[in-house]
Length: 214
View 1 (cartoon, rainbow, N blue to C red):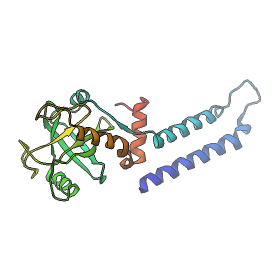
View 2: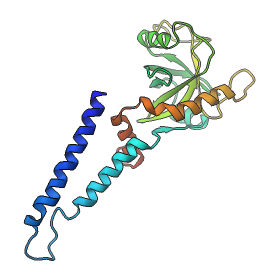
View 3: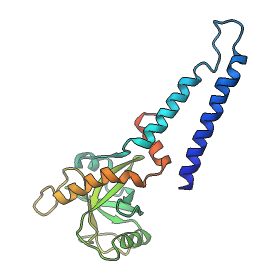
View 4: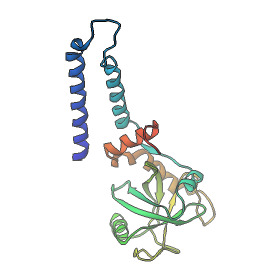
């Protein structure tokens, strides 16, 4: 929260200083030749662009949606990513280990397992949970359960793996799209942005506009 407030105050200070330069000093800097452009002539439009970018970063939904085909391509096996639980805002790291119809994943470390346990109050279940996952600097809506099943990895004190679903991903049993998972994906899309900082929203905006490499 302090970082967000600092960035906001910093933005307002920059606007004030640039406005002061524009309206106080520009007349003194204009050369006698009226055809000569002052270096500050475009400052007003630059300020407007900066302000619009700030507004977009604060107002637009920063959360993206992925089909299973898209997720399967950019979230490969053995990749480690950050997860945000939409209900609590808690963050932990996971690793995808396999999965052909959806992603099978595990907490990366014992600390990540402990975070997951605290999120579910120490009771693993098949209940679907809305989550955000971070991929390539962006955050996407997804859904998971927490019950460990099947194979996992050693050293993380989580006896198995859990499932992560995206739009149109399917369950192993019956190979059908799960309506409950799809509902939680929608919840993550609508509510997940509340847990992102201003800096994270700004980075997403810059990536979307091509100003930062994706």
